[in-house]
Image (tube, rainbow, N blue to C red; front, side):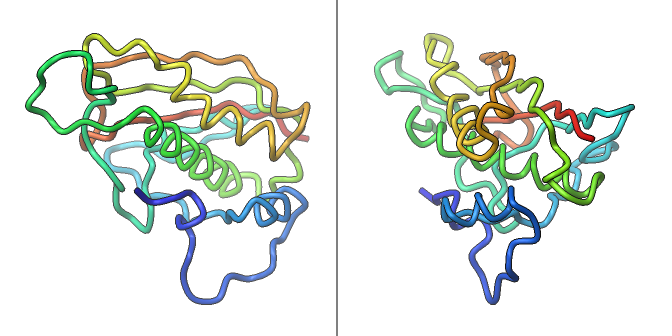
Length: 178
């Protein structure tokens, strides 16, 4: 499994440009390049003082670290690839980092964020798996660590039959900025 810290590991990483990016660096994380859309949409749009991101997959260096349905392995006999809930929680964190990269791409500076308003998380789930909230906690907990009280948000965590590219998780968010 690839950790979120590896999402941006590479050659030389420039010094963080904002307090939010500094906080990410303190957590051992950095913003990746914005993931290229896999269909006809843009990664994020601004409307008024809000940024709405498209659903972000847990791409690490342009690739999904895992594919398949999230399952504890006790739900049934599936011949499909499965992903452990603990791993999926890490991938939800990666999705949140990718969403922040999308936000930065349209507002320029993450320090302009005044609140994370809402997070919507989708979990590709074995039909009997009911732990979607725990998986999406990966995104929510990261946003809380990075933004403090401004990272506390409304949220939906939804189990689905399949996600694009057979990703185990997808996260989108709405952020308010000044």
